Length: 252
Image (cartoon, rainbow, N blue to C red):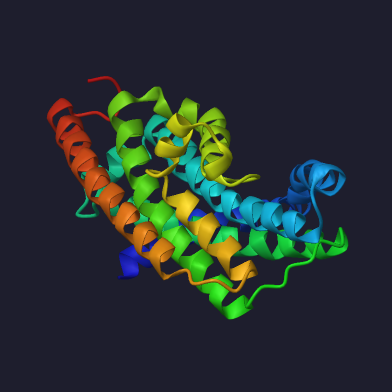
């Protein structure tokens, strides 16, 4: 447990070295969400639509941060030799990814607080039952953790797959209903959205806005996240065996 805590601390040490990053994480979401909210206000049907866009953006940020931390972070540590050092210790890649996930979720909680502040500053109503919404956010983070574990396994196997993260996270956000419900998408896109855990988290949050039942969405969120977690476990195991056999985390 102490070793895992040390890995989590390592993930957070950047903020100690670069405290201005905390300022950036609090301010930059305003620049991203503002255009979407302006469009929602100009072309939406009223405050309800603005609130639906707001919760979609809020939860999409969890996917964005996890993709960046897992994809770019794993690729960076692979290049710097950090993973090679860890492979000769008892610590598993799963522990490394778990620490990254915990660090990313703590970062996401901070970013989410900043986004909520921006939403209130923009005058966007958020009539949410906040304890329930925080539970939905936590479950969404856990579901996306499994999703990103599979992505991390792909990064380690394909090597440069982390470069797909920037564009892929935006596409996945659109398919998951970041700004509009997946039901309005073409049927093929809607089918794809059913295998993205984020889509169930966003739908659950929007149902909370309307006072509707969210149990079925949360069930699918947990099941899909668990399925991706199992797939990620298998991919990581294969990547780890290949790296140990090759004696390097680079080309093999």
